[in-house]
Image 1 (cartoon, helix red, strand yellow):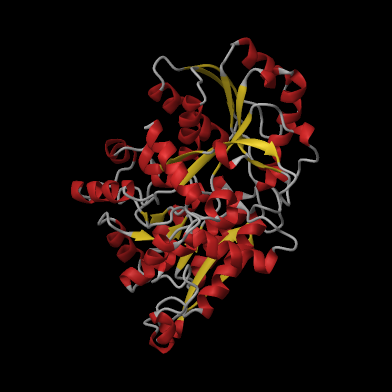
Image 2: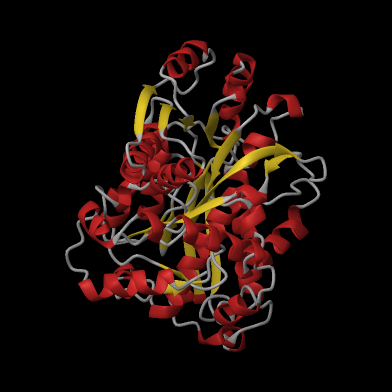
Length: 459
């Protein structure tokens, strides 16, 4: 498995040439930059009103960071405008409404989606920024017979134990982040680990995924200490002391965005960063913009990432969409956020399902995906990204890398791309486990085998 990961990483980083991806992407109106057949038949939109409508709620007020919710909203603007300019979807214009979800107020967020459903104006829904809101939404959308695609909150529960038939997942899940971190910990030589995950759903989910897989893939591997600070914890000294006392080879934490930095400062001050490798959470652009100097990054610091620009800007779809995003927003946002790529992937998935089925009916989308050979042009691969017929999750990829200070970049903290360890969903979730975690008995064994065969062939 490790050799295969190294081979995949080498191929992905070397894939600046887009030829192979463009063959697949020629039908998407995205990567090639040229109009498709849909552009020539704009008047032939098969849907009433000639327009496809989507609703989403996002953290537009940037409660948890400008490079999270707002970057997703910017990506949606870019994608809409480019798609409509190059022929739309089956000749139909794409339109959406985005409202502020009032981050943290779950009842208010649910009311937004409930009102949107009641308006009968929307063909499908995109998930919000908040994980707890995403967990509750599929009950509403599925009851209304409307499909929902994961957006920024790409948690795995609505696709595992809380699976609903009209749920579709377009990006990297908490489950994959935890398992990819376990793969990386093995590659980094860790035999024992301590975990410090914030005491709420996201942190607990990532920690659970890491612990289970770490102990499964490392002979004799053991998690020797577990800590659960509160989400807004500011004093990490007792947690650091407890972890270090257990003498782990490495530490795994599941803080994200700007909330990583306070731990970094105290971990560095403790001096333990000199001898203990630490995968310190979802280290993303929203983390890096808050770091003021090289001395704020501890030694031996790694992070996991769901869509780092140094990887996704080099795939066929990712390259095209990155250029469009930077042409429009690059003066104030010179690096494409991970969450922009998540929204790009979600909208690419929606477009592909509509084009494949010539339908806005979520049941038709479900039937297409559950054949096992459904794919679309996501930013995650140079070739097609296939969708698992059991859980409706795309074969996305998460990367773990070392965080460094690079003054040559517009934002100096970044990953060293040569250190990336990449894991995709088909690498860390085998067919038997996929079937056991998601109760979707109507999917055939042939469809599952087809999905895994096709996914493993993509570089």
